[in-house]
Amino acid sequence: MKKKFISILLAAALAATLAAGCGNDNNNGNGANENAADEGNNGNGNNGNHDTAENDGALVEEVDGSVYYLNFKPEQAEQWKDLAKEYSNETGIPVTVETAASGTYESTLKSEMAKSEAPTLFQVNGPAGLASWKDYCYDLKDSAVYKNLKSDDFALISDDGQVQGVAYVIETYGLIYNKDIMEDYCEMDGAKIKDASEINSFAKLKEVADDMQAKRDELGIKGAFASAGMDSSSDWRFKTHLANMPIYFEYEEEKVDTTDAIKGTYLDAYKNIWDLYITDATVEPTMISGMTGEDAAAEFAMGEAVFYQNGTWAYKDITGNDVDDDDMGMLPIYIGVGDEANQGLCTGSENYWCVNKNASEDDIAATLNFLEWVVTSDRGRQVFRDEMGFVTPFTTFTEEYMPENPLVDAANEYIDSGKRSVPWVFSTIPSEGWKNGVGSALLEYAQGTGDWDAVKKAFVEGWASEYSAVNQ
Image 1 (tube, helix red, strand yellow):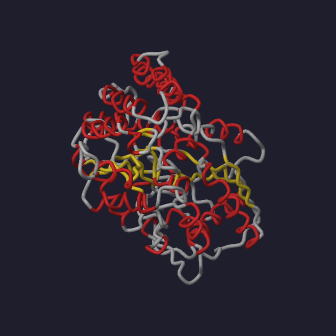
Image 2 (cartoon, rainbow, N blue to C red):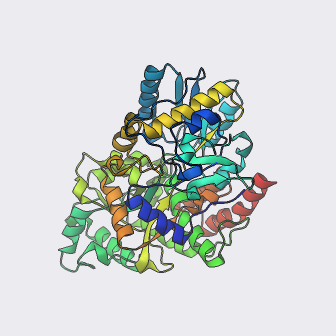
Image 3 (cartoon, helix red, strand yellow):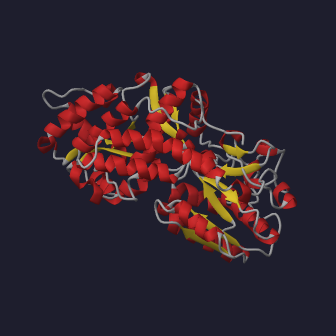
């Protein structure tokens, strides 16, 4: 497998693309219907832009199959169902969309793939996820969805050149913050900063958060940070997205893009940011086992917390409440490592479409046509922009198809300023079992029923054992 990870330079290039309304490319799969893929496309590979201005992404060939999409993202479940219904009404092709519950995608996919009516379209989160499903992936190299990618950098490509997966959304995460409360704080006597731009290191972030926590009554907040809920709707923010930080900095130091044995070089820094999240918070550390992702979003949306670790996708959960769109900003997740003054936000993808090569020829063709329609038709692009809020890696998503999202705007500001984006290396985490082990250890530590050594053990020893189990 040709492992396609975002290097620092590539992350910067991606960021520039994102700012221009561009996205990522990921290819792994097989081009099911060569004729259908070629018509309406220019050139070969990812350089062939699909002209949709005049044909609105019209289907290139009638097919008799059906589509079954197992969706990874619960927050877009209803939008996908509605879009599938529109497509079916327009074409007569049945499209079924099912969505796995948060944190259960891998187990759900295994169950569904064992059925006679298995998904024709599914997702992997990157090279590590692909390892379990590469034998199911149709080669997408001749497909329209691949040819409309901006770059191979976001494609999963095997050593023999098969395009096994295609990324369909580029996302950014960091510390979302309330600009209005931040301004109120900066005007207080004894404030540690005069402007949010002064928060450019972990030391400064901690200084400000500690002070905000002490002055929470004066600020009218419950805590500096929204609750670090550790149920399945929220724990991925910490066992995956936050864990990305120490993994990334270790990879950078070791000059690798994956490993079979993580050293845990920066776990002390991981502890520092986790301690900050659970102490300068809206709830006591002993309460986080019962807190959810909805709780954290609501706390931020109602102005009860200043900081909320999440990404551009969270906009839909917080808009329309007490925090105006103009008051949503985003800061990098500082952990006290590296060139923090030049650190940007975390940008990447863990959403790669794969087509099931074991489906019938008709179903594969129907699936490829559906994907083409989604990324070329006006309706598909409008839903991605307006309802799902996606920034995509496809050439068809020109400037007018960029979402109205202040968090995307914040991400672009970091790009424009030349900050170095932090790539999503968590796609190399060996398994969901590793994440769950780290998550359980983080919770035990927060509750006082476990120590940090258990987190280190889950992180380091768990990595080696899970990698061995997955790759044996």
